[in-house]
Length: 387
Image 1 (cartoon, rainbow, N blue to C red):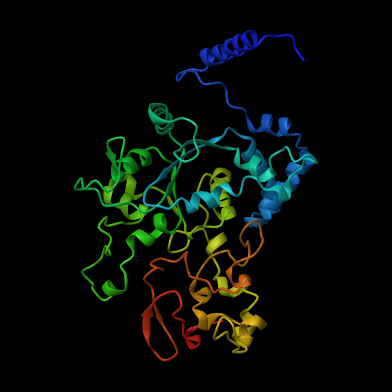
Image 2: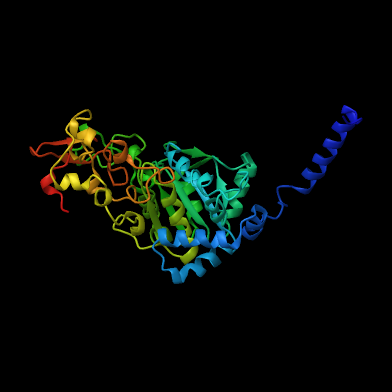
């Protein structure tokens, strides 16, 4: 036991804290570690890093000849990311952060190091994200102001945009409406990534509801906020905002690796990947969930589950009659899977809800009897589905 008194110990701690705080002011931040520093400090070998880059190249359908470019991009100066949240539930962010602590790729026998996935994402400098950032209040506002004063950063937006043009006060932060905050942050952004179905298409906040589906005049739905997609909000500003590159990473929430892969692709190429008509990356949304589902063979044989407790359910038959929207839903659920490759809804015995598609909350389904309805469990007509 040390002979140092409690008073001396408190004095020593106070002195060290004082020295630390004096060196770190709002205007003089300590130098951020580079990715090279992070790799060295984590004990990651060059071989392990190259192995991960090879796997990432395969996942993103990048030719192996371009892998050196991927490595080079990962080791360059960090790309600034500003993350804004509007009408959302934080589920998309929950999905995104789950790509970081991946013990499946842990390289340390003592489990003390981050995964390679975490390290590759450290090429991103997350300069503003209300939920995760350490600064608060004026210090947080300064972090955002400093970030958006530069050019070339990626603006990530989570959640639908309320219609605040008339100052209705649906979203007020730091004395500004959601639309004002979006316009301010998008001005110098190199690209806008809409994460989640709410940001991509309006999602739940923009849902019309069953009683309003046949009312053409109810274009904004029943929500008093008049929620809309981020792309629609940018278009309403006109000018440079209407031509700003927008990438929709839809899903409720999106798969973690889909979000991360989209961001890394932009860093690697300085542009968006090939997009579909809904501005989604084709490398993740190019196929329907149905195409790679292991239950597809039962669909082709006309073997369907008609009740969640029937013999077909126990035998793993197709879930189309239980409302599965896999044939009309574009996503990587059956290829990348969820929760670090653990599985996807159909493997758990539940049909696809179609969460990555526009208007999935309100979308009409037509069953075999020609009846229309709204709801997750109204099934599609098998005769209308093409193999």
